[in-house]
Amino acid sequence: MKVTVHRKAHFNAAHRLYRKDWSFEKNDTIFGKCNNPNFHGHNYELIASVTGEIDQETGYVIDVKILKDIIKAEVEDAFDHKNLNVEVPEFQDLNPTAENIAVVIYNKVKAKLDPKFHLEITLYETPRNFVTYSGD
Image 1: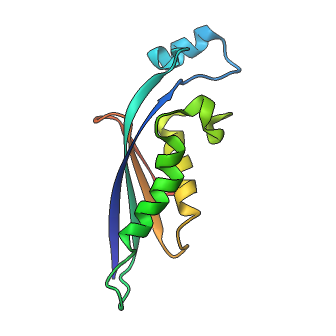
Image 2 (image 1 turned 60 degrees about the horizontal axis):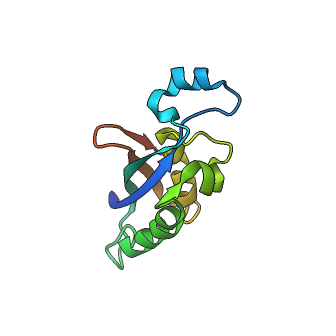
């Protein structure tokens, strides 16, 4: 029997959407106000969903404290109150769109989980704009 366990988390971060190889005008046309050279910020909401079999001894799919600690170390400590473009190595050459941030978070969390688990990351950039990634 497979069950999914969800853990919510939150971080605040600044970013700028742009490509170094494009002119300012082209970046401005594609990314609009998100191309602000002085950056802009979001209050990101994260949901990490882990699916697996219920352990017959513990009754858990995964101990939520383990998931909480992974998210704290790999996401909150790494991204919270940071400028993603400047301070987070994964975005030195990767545009920090919500889509790319979700994939980076997935890869960081998945690397710390037992491979038997299926992981899905849902990242809210705003209350109405969010992305989901599950490794596909």
